[in-house]
Length: 618
Image (cartoon, rainbow, N blue to C red; front, side):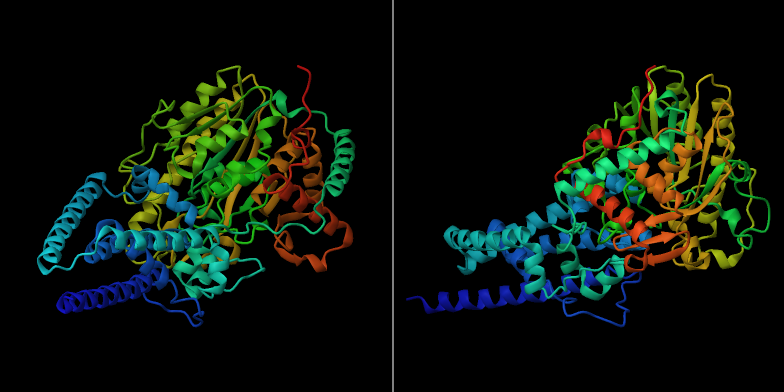
């Protein structure tokens, strides 16, 4: 028996496991640090699960070792993967005050588009990837030769056993993530509404929190959800819609509708101490004063566009989910939901989506196909006008106007779902010929961010300028055109100081409804309105007949309900828990949650007619 070789094997195994263990400790440490803006763990309460996750890293290291045959190479590969996660998560924490979720890891299938979001050169990324690959290959060769010389090598059978065991462990975690999280990682299960996922992640740790997003419970199943109850709901709101429609004279499908999401649009002029010179949005402010308008409540700062557009299209509430900020319906579940009924089904003509950016993020192509978009125009696919303003990164709103005008010239277009990009971050490039020079109170920008803020505000002024063109074009058209215009969220340029705008101010964006041909006789203001109600407001503005679903929403809207949560509502700015609601209002809210659950996670007892507005015979 070769005792020297056995001794070397034992020493090698002990040292290897020690290296893997120590490395796993530091990986977990830095993943947790990435949850904090300055990488400093600074929170009063740290949960029992905070430092857990080493077992996942250790087993992953063993899995890679079984494939490459080198502990050092395995550790390096794990560190490269972890470094990418640390950078990606920290960027999201800084930009959006939110954390990375499991569904977002799938965007690795489109690295070019992910890189574009953070403005890193593809050349730099490819160079770094090639260097890392070469280094790893060289290390693997050197370590393999060293192991061969010392006679310390594990045969393929041994590595196969490690491969099977580590794969089985990780597959078990993936199959039963919530059970593993609760029992092994000590991640506390919560039945309550999670208003601040980042804060909870800072208490419970990156890896347990990431595992909790693999197979989350997105929405609480209503206690009364059953077919008999849904049939009753359908009958009730069919009658309600008939009553409303007796006084509604117009049909939604007789007009062309533009649903226009303006990226990162806020109204700085609402805060008089912010700027001490001229208005940023003088024309849009005039529309807000004269039209059916108000402010929308957006849960997001620096991101969340896909979520807001989903809520507008479906009239479903993001706040009805367990973790509304970390839940992204497009990426997480909506492709597989049993129902995809939206406002788009309420036209006999074509539904067109226009987005002057990539289509690879948030599964938009698959989603748009499901919800009935007949044509999706995006960069490299249908977008003809790509001019930019000044030195900005993104396609301008003026170019986007041209795309809209082309569609309005057609007789086949019924609805346009439009998403702008001009005012999307980053804001490091200027507009040299801009005639708008904002004087900003220094209290309203972080150190070193004055230039970015000026660039952002000048972009807003350009949006305001081209809105004049859009309204003029609509007014000169012989078609009836509805324009629903809204901002999606606060820009990330205010990160770190957004609290200066108050509790609601940093979640507030403007919206207005413009109907040409003097059709809008309503001048109403609705403040801090959930995006789910924007369609309801537009139907009221146009005196349009409603679907049974919109019959329910119209009833809630008339009762001054502005937001609907998992166990609460808002009436304007007042939060009211379910237990404090009048019986009649609570019944309406419970019906709404049942309808939403049925469409997204239930049996789809309600057919498309329930969501589709009545159509004229023309």
